[in-house]
Structure formats: structure tokens, C-alpha cells
Image (tube, rainbow, N blue to C red; front, side, top):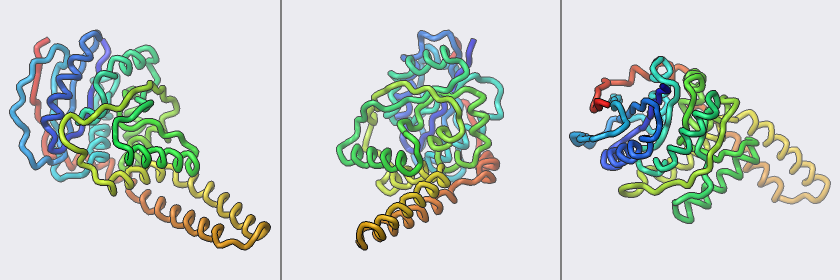
Length: 295
């Protein structure tokens, strides 16, 4: 029997998390596999309500309490590092706890990874549920990433990784800065399944616009040397055009913007830290079991 670990970070969103867990359970009943959940509590200031679950399939839920708030990305990294040292699973499912990673897509993701066996599966987005502004910024991010890094970033956190890929990522400093960038950079084979991003169960997103920009930049920073190489090509091209066609300030401005962009990318890349990743379990306050089902 295959064993799945479901990793979910949470910060002050217990209502959404509990609804998600029930929806997950409803969507995995058809599989002859073992499912356990690992929640990373990012030092929530709101006390977790007393859980009262009645699951058909989820075997147990463990809660890792973090000593100090460290953000969504580093909670993912901490959970992945923790799981990488465990031998009691075959696959890890990573998903957000707010409902945007739609649990209705779990059967498709699980079915594909059981068929592919040794190839990790990511949820690619054929449609998003956010507003116009976010959609425009998201598409702009994809275009910039494609132009400067040469990567089509069409997935986020929602995925199912093989245990070998979990172990692989747990040794890469890029993981401390961005999960999707690390997965795209280091996992040689990723199979994408087309999904529609869900809507938040309760309330607006807690991530400000600046957080989204840093998140986007950290993905691009995962490929900083590709960015540098391509940026230099653009600078040479615009400099050549400036000399041969006409001395136009537009080309100089473009070169300045590209140079500034590279500086920002290399600055953001300093978020990557192998030492922080290797020692991240010191940030764990305690681990507690909050539910066990007799199946």
C-alpha cells in the first residue's frame, strides 16, 4: 500500500484549514492508499479551535508548531526538510490551506502519480479565479520569467512529489527562497496536470502586493545566472542598435532598466540559504498529534 503525506502550511486560517481537510478526505476515499497530514503552524496568533473530525480516509494529523513566524515559503521548506528524514511515505502532496489549491483535483493528481510512479506531478493552471489586476500581473510575471530565465512557470505549490524528489529538494538552498523555482530548477522530470485554481474559502488573501512581487522575483532569482546571461545579450543588442540605427535615449533607458533588474534579482537571490535550510528544524517548537482515525 502506497503512503501519502499531505503537507499544508497555516497561519491564522483555521476555519479554511478545517474545511479543506474535510474536502480532502472526501476526495481520496477511492484510493487504496494511506493518507496522513502534516500541518505547519507558522506561529499563528489565533488559537486553533478544538478539532472534531470524522474522517473516512485520513489516518492521522500532526501539527508542527513553529517558534517564530517565518512565512509561507519557509514553512514549506521546513516541512519538506522534516519529511526528507522520514522513511514512512512514498509521496508528498503539497498544497495551500485556504482552498485555492482545489482538493477536487486531488483524484487526478494522485491517479497520475500512481501511474507515473517515479515522476512527480504538478498542478498547472489553465484558468485562475483571481481578479483582473492579479491576472494581468501573473501573466506579466510569466512573460518576464520566460524571457529572462527561459522557463515556463505554469505551476505553484500544488503538487505531488516522489520521496526521492522530496529528498533531492531538501538539500537545495533555493528551496529556502522559493519552492516552485527550486522544483523547476532541480527536479528533472515533472508531469503537469491541468487544473483550475480555486477560490479562497473565507476572507481575502493575507499576502500584500509587495509579497506577491517578492514571490515572483524569488522564482526568477532561482535562475539568476540565466537571467544575467540573457540580460547581457539584451544589453549588447540594444547598445548595437543605439550605435547603428540612431543614438536614441530609449535604448539607454532599456539598458539601465535591465541592469537594475539584474541587481534586484541577485539581491533577492540572497534569500537562498543552505545553512538556514539545514538548521530549520531548530525553529520547531513542538510536534503534536491532533487527530488519529481508527480505520
